[in-house]
Image (cartoon, rainbow, N blue to C red; front, side, top):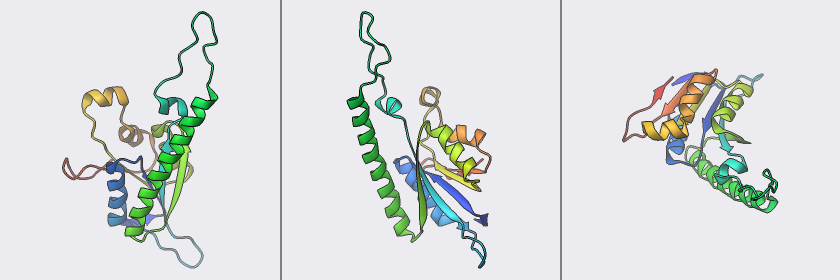
Length: 175
């Protein structure tokens, strides 16, 4: 697939599905080449870290009998943030190895927040021509409780979206 793609964002979350989407992008997409006075197209590998409160999956319980209910424990937050930085570094290292396999230079971007909202926000801010993402193919029950990041993005981002599905479960689709 080739077009005048100047900015292609590939969202990665560490799952094998997201790394398959990165491989798919390198195998199937051709970025525009520039003339002497313009710039080449760019692949942007995007990772969204959830905020520490979401990453913990909980907030420390309020102190019983009238204690402060919104007390933040700095050591708890710092430990979660440190752990998230290590996870992010591992995810970007995995993505970097894939980029090396295909001899593709990419820009990496890490943002903190709700993945579905931040992916759309970055796509808008970078004026992306295309968003590529994997699909974990949650069943209807999990999707109801967890939501589908790819579904949200297809309905809220301004650029076209390609969702790369697991080869065993189906082929890629676009929205």
